[in-house]
Length: 138
Image (cartoon, rainbow, N blue to C red; front, side, top):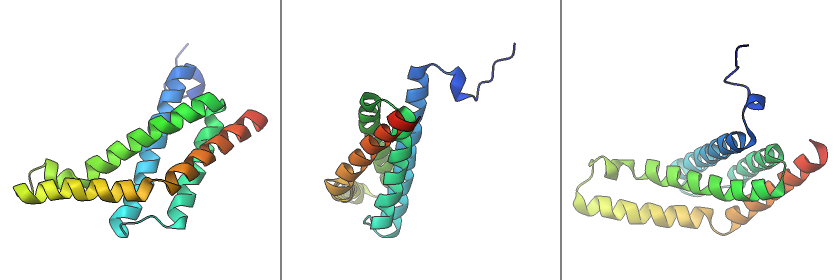
């Protein structure tokens, strides 16, 4: 019997949850990067898009404990990707010494102000709502 490597049903629950959390974090990072690169702040549409992703991921995770831990893991992954890609010119040495230090501090400030507290709490609530939907209907 040939094993299908792309089927989520063939994965164990831990591997499935890990794959969901990594995908969830990458999607959050993509939404936030698009917003911060274009406007340097998040709009309601950006938060709504990220909330929709969180509802979907929470519903797929089904259990509220997994959704809560998965949310925090996804936010850590998403924030790390966001910071890494935003400060990539400084990491590659494309900026002189004082400018690269300023870039790090500047992006930490921009990311922190963009994510905390309102979007962080909205996305947390969306993940919990998604988990309740998944627990009830899936």
